[in-house]
Amino acid sequence: MAQYYLAKNGQKAGPFTIEQLVQNGLTPESLVFTQGMTAWTKASEVAELASVLKPTPAPQPAPAAPAPAPAPQPQYQAPQPQYQAPQPQYQAPQPQYQQPYQQPAMGNYVATPQMDFVTAVKTCLQKYFNFKGRARRSEFWWFMLATYIFNSVVNGILYSIMGGLLAKKEALKAELTQQGLNSIMNGGDLEAVKQAAESQDPTTTIIILGILMFIVSVVIFIPQLSAMVRRLHDVGKSGNILWLYLLCGIGGIIGLILCIPEGKPEPNKYGESPKFKLQQ
Image 1 (cartoon, rainbow, N blue to C red):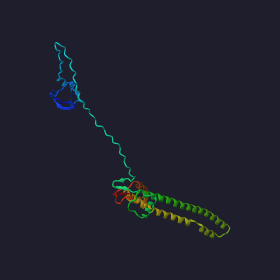
Image 2 (image 1 turned 120 degrees about the horizontal axis):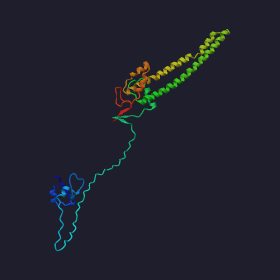
Image 3 (image 1 turned 90 degrees about the vertical axis):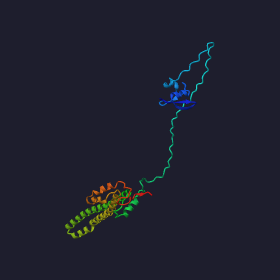
Image 4 (image 1 turned 90 degrees about the horizontal axis):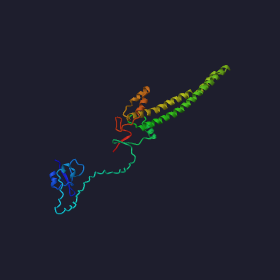
């Protein structure tokens, strides 16, 4: 059997059975509420309660005189309970203080500033024969750029000098050949012509320049090789792959490709990271 709440004197009472509602002064205008309802409802509009409500009979007029009109009965209207849904509380975004720029931290490691061009060149020259340890990307690629520029300038100068000497040699050869022919035809001293040709021959100078170019290449190649080995160590690779470069020339390209990724911040078997430092 359903149980009802009764709005009485502005207060909610109950729950009551139907009999208890009648005992508590249930009227057709009384507001009731039970499970399944969406709002408080008059008792006369609830089918289950309307059957127990008996209409009050109108008073019969007296035989001798007409019955006085009934005084108007005050109708009590219980206050309707108003349901107020919780209002969402808007919170304005709080301004966040912008910290000064810091290098991105990776775990407990923080990146140190990038190595500049001059520092990279000095570092690699100081580690001329050092094939151990690790080299960060800025150190390696700045030094590779420096050696490329140096080789281009020096070799360009030497090639220009050698080209001029070779052209001079060919011109001198043609001139001395003509002089030799004229000397033979005129009965001159051919041996003197040969000695003059040998004294002006630039072949010795060309050979010296070639040796100088080779020495420059070797001088630059050694720190390039050591820097690449350290760079491979930084990405966790062995420098033995460069033996392919020394034997057949293909290891250099593979080594350069392997030198592109960022090194791990954690120490590896080749040593501590030259870029990432442990945050205290």
